[in-house]
Figure 1 (cartoon, one colour):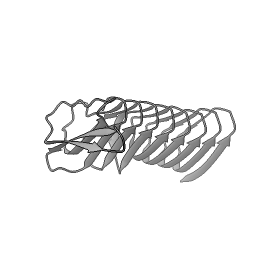
Figure 2 (tube, one colour):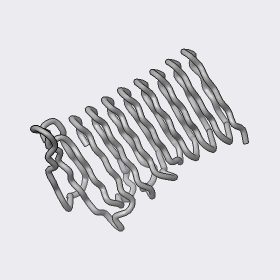
Figure 3 (cartoon, helix red, strand yellow):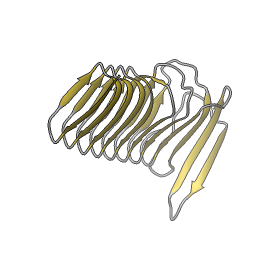
Figure 4 (spheres, helix red, strand yellow):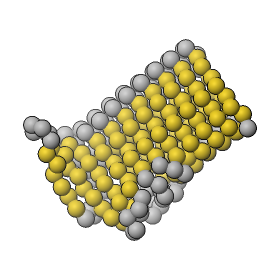
Length: 193
């Protein structure tokens, strides 16, 4: 097991084949992590992250970079202020949260999630693609009534309007599939959910 700490101001780097803990910090460089088995804690001001074929716990934060996670089995906390988040061929191994202020978030699952998941965008699209896997859980989808849209390949059990201050109204639609577990929350302010 190896604990690795990597820092760069504006340079790019790639780390591969690590078992243990990887802590990465960059100001504006791009970081690629491959085949990490353990935990990843990565932070960037404006750089992009690409995480592939990793297992364990992933915590990645960027001010304005793009976050790409693929072919991984993990519990994930992914946050960016104004970049997009893309997760493909993902199997959840813990709670997952994908949040962006103004980019799109798309999560494509390799298997049905067994843990709670939230997918949120302030002004972009928020999408979960079950990719042909069984849809189970309590699925709660939210979007602005005035500026957003909700679409799903199933019927909803409940639709509500939540009034906020002024003319701000959120539509919330809920569907219970199978056992009603886990909870999958998908929301956007002004995009499609």
